Each structure stands twice: as structure tokens, then as C-alpha cells.
Image (cartoon, rainbow over the protein chains, first blue to last red):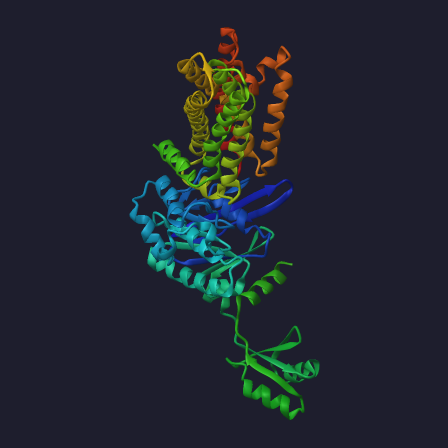
Length: 300
Length: 239
């Protein structure tokens, strides 16, 4: 598998605090890698290290197999934290500055404006753009020169629901439309779950888990049960051979030994025949949020 | 090649900016003051004094204060929208970016001096049209004086820009500029104060050629040396 970005034992300390602690991640080429973690987990620091904006205290970073040197990386476009644009200039003028610095032809401006669907407002001053438009313009700027890797740090931050939907659609389109690899950092797990092909989770600068999204979400099928008396219901189901766990008052019922499915009809019949008041019964959908919390619990 | 790209980009950033407005209006203000002072006098206005007072007002107050404001506006153009990450992540950008910023700032100061020269000439024509004048305007002398002042101001400009780029807040460069301008008033009276960077443009008004040479050496050559140190410092910093 070709890697767009790989870190090995990457460490960065600010004073005595390790913001990134022996982090090793592998971002496969041509996919969308969701880089997840709580605020302050070390995501932005990792991305700044990858872009050569910070010096690592230990470890290494490779972009497409080449070690990252301080002072900018070729073939990488980035949007770090906020869409940093010049408000007194128009959208096109903002793009033109970066285009000139990269030595690209003027046609690049219209191309990237079309990709982010801002062609009709390119002549307006950025000061009058909404946050969603600024985010898209900053992505357009990062796309100048068709970078092989696009690093987006919290691209949905501060966006309204409509802006989030637009951004999600844009992110899904980019790998095929631009032939680029996306590395998207976010603390919004549900959001990343909808677009990512691979996921890496970090906590306190350390990697919790990293895998493809389907692999992370491939947990044993289970059903969620809510009753008036969860403790009694749990006893009853365990007695019938089901593996039962408690998740904030809801019972999570896994398949009985030897069965491939948790058999919701059987669970419902058992509870009703026992006189339990059944309030909720649903197939439990695996989510990144559950994976994240499970990994946090394991790490603790 | 990369420097040329950065220079063009830095110039393009000035479109519709406050920095450009400042560069245009500050010399205009000096011209208006000089005309008003000239017209206030009941006697014929000696044009040589009109030119010298304009240059003195420029060197003593307006140039350092304008350089202060200009450095703040140029640096805040990046600090404000937080464009450093984007700029510094571009391949091979660091040193050229800061060098281009310094060169554009120096070019703007030189441009202001040229603009002031033109305005003072226009002002002399206006004064002569509505008020009696005496003598003739030494245009070559005025041009040389303003050019030397711009050259002697290089060190002050670079120090101001360095501080403005180094600190995200606009307060440190603003304080430096205001304090520098007013300390220059006191320093002008002390022998040791002769080397104060903010006084170099003012020394160009001196009748002693040695003083002028010293101002040019410290202001210009010292400014270039300061620029080199600034580039090393800013290029090495983490974004």
C-alpha cells in the first residue's frame, strides 16, 4: 500500500507537555483519512509538524516516502484551523496570490473555483463571504496545483448545518475529482464517519487506534433493549444465554453462543412473557463514537 | 525567481489596503501643514525655508510615525487573518517572504519620499500663486535631502518591521514607534543620542557633511545588517 503520509515515533513537546507523543500513523494514498480526537488531543500539532511549520523533537515524518523538511512541503495543500484569507481582496485575488507563489498558470484559479462551486462569487471581496464560503475558498486555495495530499484541519468548524452538508459533499468529491488524498482532522466523529475511508484516533498525543473505517465498525451484531427494569431484564436474558452489557441504562444484547444474530424476536418474546415492560428494541448500529469511547476505556 | 514572485505578491496585497492609503495621505498632510504655515506668515514666504521646514517636519515626526503605522498595517495584514501557516507552508517560502516584506516596506518609504518631493513642489507653486514668495525652490537639493532621509531611515524601518512581524499584537510595534519618536526628541540634545536610529533621517538636515555621512552609514548600512539578522531570526522561528 502506498502511503501519502507516514509518521514514526513522532514527538513534539511544548515545555514539559508532550503535545504529540511517539505517534505513528499511516495515511494511505487516494482515500479520506479521518484524524480524530478531542480538542487538545494533538491533531493540529501533528498536522503542523507534517507541514514543516514545527520542528519535531523526535521521530520522523514522510510524505510520499520522502522525509519532510522544514520550510514547506511540495505537493501538499493545507487548510489549518481557520480559513486565513485577505478580507480586503476578492476571492480570485486571494487565489491569485498563491497561484503566483506556486508559479501556476492563471487558468488554475477558475479550475479550483469550479471545484468548490464559488465561480459566481470569485469577484466579491472575501470580507463579505460567509464562513462556509471562506472555508471553501481556503480549500480552493489549497487545491491550487493539484496537490497529491490535502490536509484539512477541522474543515466543518463553525459551519451552519447547510454549510456542513456542502462541505461533506465537497470532501467526498475531492479524491476522485482531484486525484488527491485527504487528511481531515476533526473532533466531530459522526461527521468524519460519513466521509472517511480510514480513521486514526488520538488522545493526549498518542494513537488510540488506526484502521479502515469498515474494519473499525465491524463489531459483532447486537441489539439495544430498553425496559422499565433493566437489571431484572439483564438477569433474565443472561439466564437465557445472551451476553448482555449496560450502556447508559440501555441493555446491549449480543448473540447467544452458537447463534450468528442476537435474535430480536426471541429477546422480545422472553421479556414480554416475563412481564417486563418493553420500551425500546432496535438493532445496534456500530459508530465511530462507540469505537472511540471503547478505545478510551481500554487506554485508561 | 522566488523572491520576485514574493515581491509581486506583496505589492498585490496592498490593493485597497490601509497601508496604501497611509502611504498616499501621510506626505499630503506634510504638504498641507507647510502650505498653511507659509500662508500664515504676513511676509513673503522664503521658498528655501518652506522646503527645509517640510523636510524637517517629515524627518522629525511624520516619517517615524508613518513608518510605525506602516509596519503595523503590513504585519497585521498577515497576523489579522492568520495567514502565516499558509504562507510558511509553501515550499521554500520563509526567507524570501520576510525579505520581500522588508523590501516592499523600504520601497513604500522611498515612494513616500518621492511623493513628498512632488507634493512639496506642487505646494510651492500653490503658495506662490496665492501669497508673495521670496527666493527659488532648490528642487535638486530637496530631492537629494529626501532621498538621503529615506536611505538613513532604513534601520528604523527594519527594526519597526521586525517587531511588528514578531509579535501578533499590534501594541509592541506601536509602543516602540511612539517611544522611538519621542525619545528622539530628547536624544537629539545628547551627544550619545546622535546614534539613535530614529534620529538618522533628521541628521540629514545637518550642515556638517560628517554628520550626514554618519547618518547614512548607520541608517542605511546598519539597516541592511539589521535586515540580515531579522531574516535569520524570523526564518528560524516556529510558526
